[in-house]
Structure formats: C-alpha cells, structure tokens
Image (cartoon, rainbow, N blue to C red):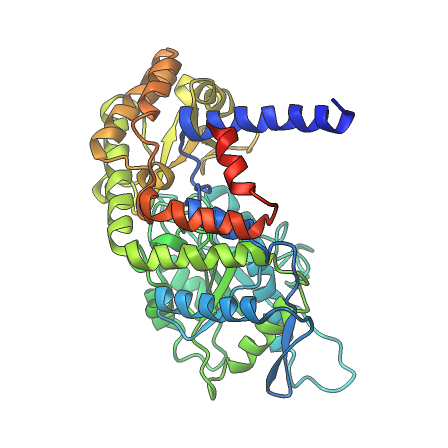
Length: 475
C-alpha cells in the first residue's frame, strides 16, 4: 500500500467513525446545526461544486464573466424565486456564503448608501449610531463591533468606543426588550441602524412596535432582522418584513433545511427610497465580498428551498411544539429552565437551561457529549464571563426532522436530568434511543430519493461502472 493509500485509508476510517457517531449514535441538540437531506447533499457534490459564475448588473443588464454557466444561472434565478416565496418578498440576494457575511454585506451597503450624494472630495463617513442586542444577553456575535459590524460604525468621541447602544431589557426578564425604555432611547439617540435577532433566541423581537415609532421620522433608521437562528421558522415565529423590518439576513443551515450559506432579503421596489440600498447590497455581495460563491451549495440551497416550501407549515408547528414540551419536561425533572413559563419557556426551537448549581457549563456540556448528547454551553445574562458559563443552549430542530415527537423529548429530558443533576452515565441507553430516529422527515422518502441520488452519482463521477462497483463494495 502506498503512502497516499495509507493516509487515505486512515482518514476515511476516521470519517466513517465520526459519521457513525454523529448520525447514528448521538442526539444532536446544537441549535445552530442541522443535517441536510440526502438530495441536498447530492446537489452539493454535483458538477457546479468548484465552478465559477461571477456576475453583476452593468448598464441595466446582468453580465456573467464565465462560460458554461447557463444551468447554474437558471438555478440562482430559481433560488431567488423559491426564497422569495418563502419570505413573501420581492428581492433576494443568495450569493453570501454565511450569515456573518450576509450581515457584513448589509453594513457595507448601508455605509455606501448613507454616503450617496455627499459633496465631492468629502471622505466617506461611518454609521453614526447603531442599536443592537447585547452580546451577553443573547445578541449575535456577527452584529457586534467585534464581529461583522467592525469598522462600519463611528466612534463615540466621549468614550472612544464604537457608537453602539444595546437594546434595554426588562428588569425581570433579560431575554425580552423593555419597549418603554427603548422608546425613550430611540427618541433621544436617533440611530441610523437597528439590528434585531439573537443567537440565544427564545422570545419575539418588538419589530412592529419600533416600526410604528419611527414611521414618521424624516430620517428613518434601517430596521434589520438577523434571522440566522430562526430562518426556518419565518412566518410562524415572526414575519419581520410584514412586521416592518426593511431587510432580513440569515444563514441557511440552522432551522432552515439548507447547506451552509447566507441570504439577504427584502422588498425594495423601483421608486422606493431604499431602492439604491438594494443596489448597493447586490454590489457588496459581488464584487464586494465574494468571488466564487460556492455553486455546489447554491444548488443544494435550491433543493432545500423546495423541501422547506413543501413542508414549512408542518415542520414549523412541530419544532415549536417540541421545544415547549422539551422545556416543560426538563423543568418537571428538576433542571432549571430559562425564559418565561407563561410563554412555555420558548417561542423558537431553542431551550436554555441553567446548570450552575450542578457545575460549570463547559464541564456539563462535556459530560453530556460523553453520553452522546451534543449541546452548546452558554453564558447566561448574569454571568461575568463567557469562560465561566452557567447555561446550556439546546435546539430541537435536527431531531424533530429525524422524527422525534413531544413524548420522545420527554424521554430525552430524563437522560439529560440524569446526567446533569445525578451525574449518571446513560450513554448506552442514549445510543439505543437514537436508533429509533434514523429516517429523515420533511423531505422526499428514501424510496423516492434513492433513484435520484443514483442518477446524480452516475453523472457526477463518470468512471465506467462507478455506481455498480460502488454498490458491490457496499454489499
């Protein structure tokens, strides 16, 4: 065996071991992850993977800079149509390859937009003031100055720091915005950008309330909703564009069914005062932030959009019901649950538990992992540092898609309570439990999908007899 063969054999042994552990033996509750369907994965390995299809609008026409792109050109158009149907909007920019990039594209575009019409020779200015969710209270990292907002917001001359003000939160519930205080802050501060959305996300954001407050301002702020964690729940949890947001961003692989990409969407019809902002968003997507925008995953996003539009209502209803049931079961079994109990502790796919009385969040997340339950340790709003987290963040979206119902999450809550509160090790029971949930729902059945997947394998890897030899090796 050659050295290359040895290395490949070792690598693929490890890949197989990890695949088996993650896909057949473990329960994944990480709220920012989801396994794509077989057909989405088949799209990802198809010929467009690794190809280029750069394009931009020039003199009113869309100009492509590569040949051999007629197929993927049509795919991108159809992605926009399917996502436009999902969000109920007219404009979609699907070329960003992550939620963080989607946010940065909007920030770049907004800086360009507010500088349109400035006197010749005057340097471009940054955004005067931005309001967002506090990172320590669940705000998304990419919406912070240390994240994608870096270098796009002006400095406060009094403090020397970025001129970013966090939304005030309710005294008795740090997961909800205090609308009365926010109303006063808005009137006093007059921000240019409001960024809703979180990574620790269990409550609705007051979009309609804010949109009504600023609707008569002469210089209205841009209302942006980062839906990264709740994109797949759009419409059921919140419908930001209908509620008054100007633009939404997100990643397509958390609660949405897609591969890892980003998306920007909104309504910017011709004649709209923000129409030029949309043109700036398109230009900041390409050539401002991307060259190759990963055409294999773009094709996968189209398949995922088909699935989401076909199963949206049933999937969203089940995810939210499972999350509420899971939270209630954990509470009943002695695990402290964050959030408002009158809301069922959560309005999304996420469930937050407080584990401080049982140990450090990092250590407990590791104990859960050692027992094949994958979670996310999380600093809670009253923690002093992310290095000493009191919480565990969980999401039900992936296991819901693998068929778990409310009673199954009740069983799972028992395993978690045993691990967290009693320091038991039910690893083998968890592995056996996972065997009941190996068939993915909310997509084509395996009987329907396999013939399509086989056709893709035959065409994507045109070695003589490839599929036949593959089937022989699998047997």
